[in-house]
Length: 236
Image 1: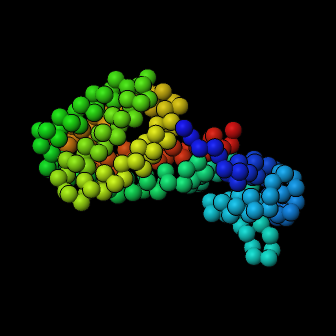
Image 2: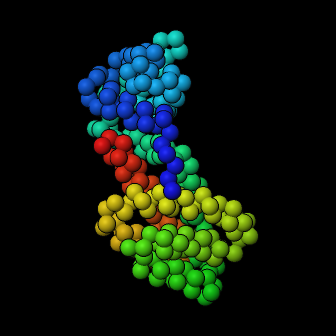
Image 3: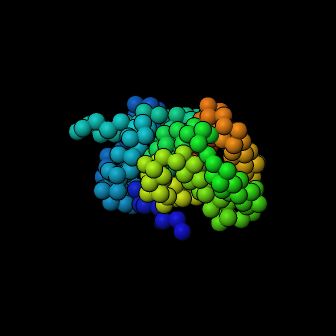
């Protein structure tokens, strides 16, 4: 079950819609913390947390002793620049995607060189389950997770395997969030399935460089689509 959105993240949404929707100019000063707290009926502590989050994502500038200033006046037209807004829902998702790209790209490369018939059967089973899981989110989550963990185990690198086992819970959470947002567009399920199939075929055929490229493309695409989906949600 998703955690209730924290108060300052709700406020980030409200400030973005109120001040960063094209009605104010870049360089314009935001109202004081006291006035913002009064306007949105929240504490000044919540205001400070929201402003820090906006600053971290490049939307405003906080000048010590000088207040907060708008850096981006039209958030909607600039949404592609703010891929890190995925931090608004779950700070670990973006970090896990970065880690997964670093770990899984090399895993795919090594798996293509080292996978045994048993490894390939495990990947094939996960792929078949993923094929049947379009209307079954629980099965889809398990199949996706099994596929990616199966690739790491197919490297036969004990450190990779220990690391992936340690990260299993975080990977499951990340996949759950990415599926939730990617599959709002039903056509993306077919795209995701095809990406997995192509990665499997590259590994099964021993094409290490292709497996590496396909895995990098897969995770990069997930990141971009996830960020776009979350930005749209934020602006709705």
